[in-house]
Length: 355
Image 1 (cartoon, rainbow, N blue to C red):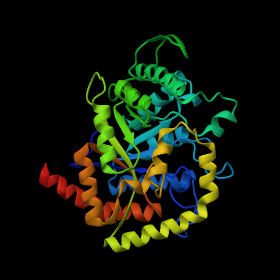
Image 2 (cartoon, rainbow, N blue to C red):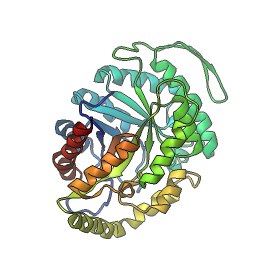
Image 3 (cartoon, rainbow, N blue to C red):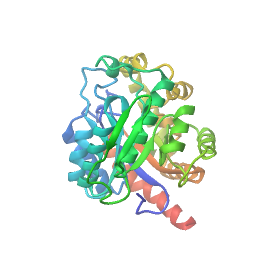
Image 4 (cartoon, helix red, strand yellow):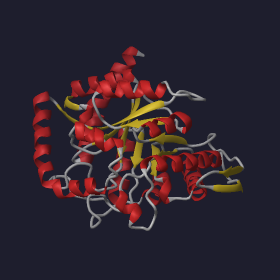
């Protein structure tokens, strides 16, 4: 799915946890409700954002006493509620059999008239898997499972009759209809930064989501994946980032300092995330090097500054190869609107000049 704008594409994270930064922000009450998420995504579509990413957890990693939006039922409803925005829907292979998930995906693809994308993420939060009585394989074994799972799902999404006999799955002549109503199949986004994740996206993905981090790291990651064996079109790239943009750099840095103060109140929830995380997950090793506001690298991408500075930084990432910027804000709705009104037009004007 391509943007209707020149240059980078912009997306927003649906607020599945109720916040992507502090649970203590006075202007951003903790709210993971369907009503809030529906309104947020409709607002994003109205503001011209290209995509939304609906992350997947069954229980909230910051505390299982907190609300958590369910991903696939919510996206089915969003498919009917929205008209244009791409619906990038996260999926953890351990939680859904590939035949069931492929059928659900094809139905949402039909409801949305060709706007569904899958974001395949191998689980990192152990409690939501293990407490359900599901085995939590070691890191490399999860990718072996995920690779088989994704091959089956991708073939079913194309409408193929699938015969597959692997280490984890035995599929005996399965075919799903309807398929291919709007395009050959939905897009596949892959998350994760380990060697196995890079192999997976090179072999079976369309877009690789990179966590927010300095530009030199991003350039190295893109070069590494681009050099891996691949059939079909080149991999495209997305970047997660938390945005703090203001009229002046001084105002933005003051706001960032305020977020760090709020962050001090969130330690119990953050400790719960770390305690439940797989110690082999490469992204947490990256996060430890670059402390940030927001999840998935957040402000480590450096989208903090004046409107002009943030727009320029986005353009620099775009020149490195980043196509889609998946953005977080706080308070989400107000700052999303600020970005759409102040930063996005600057980026698009620059892109139009250089096109």
